Length: 177
View 1 (tube, rainbow, N blue to C red):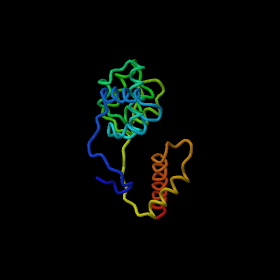
View 2: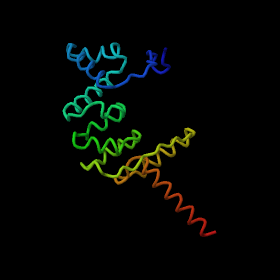
View 3: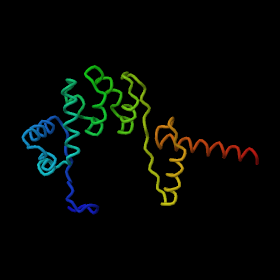
View 4: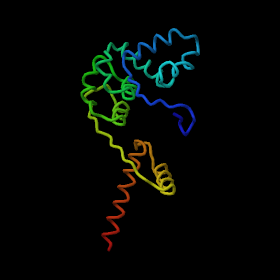
């Protein structure tokens, strides 16, 4: 099957990222000459070089922290990639319980705000899809960039601040009527 964007074949199967794949990737990498791994991994395993490297990094962190893959593998590789930055043998159970139903944005926020306390409060992050015309998109994007300040955590908080400001303006306008 051809992909319309880059005319390269696309893979229709979902690759399960687990300890077995990590073991096979590591063995393959160790058997490759310098620079060969990146060139051959997609053909051999059906996954992109970048994902293969993430899987190896996750496996290294789990091995270093003495955490069984089975304990965390149910989360999927994108969440594990983020959690590998903070997870330890001591905090793995608490973090797994806290983030059991979390989406990737919530996991990223948790990792970004992690202060060593696995009992910290995790406020779920929600995703909103907006359908906009190109002009609306450009106007919102420019406004968000203009109102971002260091205290705001990305576009979400900038948009929330913008909405709050619009709501206050609307309330003031209604009071004067």
